[in-house]
Image (spheres, rainbow, N blue to C red):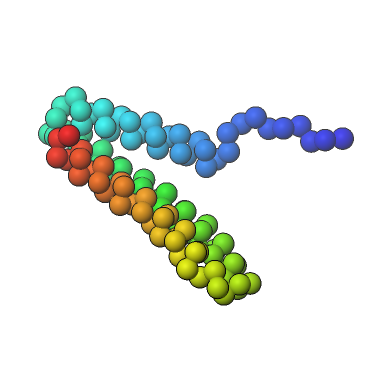
Length: 104
C-alpha cells in the first residue's frame, strides 16, 4: 500500500519563506523611512541571505562537480562554470544592498 503524502512544507521551504517575509519587511522599512531607520537592517539581511543561499548552492554544485571530475577529468572547465554561477548570487545581494543604502 502506498504511503500517504505529507502536504506540509519541508523545513528548508519554511525557512526560505520566513527569510523572504523578513527581507520584505526590511525593504519596506527602508522605503517608508528613507535611509534613516530600516535601510541598514535591510541591506544586512539581503547580503546575509544571499551569502547563505550561495553557500548552499556552492556546496551542492561543488559536491556534484567533484563527483563528475572523478569520473571524467575533462569536465573540469564546465563544472567550474556552475560553481562560479552559484558564487555570483552573493554579488547580486551586494548590489541590491548598495541600491538600498544609496536610496534607490
